[in-house]
Amino acid sequence: MREEIQALDLEIDNLKQQRKKTEHHIPVKSLPEEDQFTRLRTERKHFIDTLKMIAYRAETSMASLLREHMARGGDDARALLRQIFQTEADLTPDLAANTLTIRLHHLTQAAHDQAIEQMLADLNATETVFPGTTLTLVFKLGSA
Image (cartoon, rainbow, N blue to C red):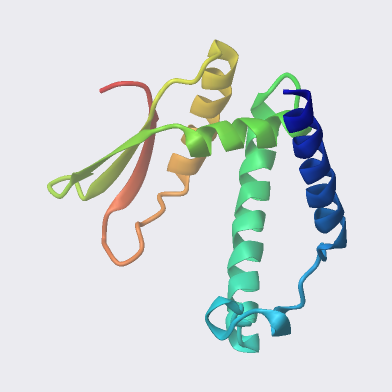
């Protein structure tokens, strides 16, 4: 058993040496053709960057709305927004009333629910129309 252990220890040492010799960074040019990354064209990159900037500005605006209604503002507003974005919501179109209701589920803390209800009231006051339709967005919190 001891000889077998020594042989395995030698094999481990050899494998460790091989691992040390392995390059940590591999140039893209050295990859096979099918594994190489395709670089985004400049126009696509600008388009994606523009979308990211629009999303960031929208998140910042929503965070400022939340801060007005929270006892502790700052980064708590962005953390609460992340929680909202990860929470399930129900979408209910009402063609007769010409509305699209977005119903958020309750969050873990009552204080968060209160801040969100006030932010949703602010959003409802804008009477935003869902793009490509005539449906007005109506935001609500809680079950139907």
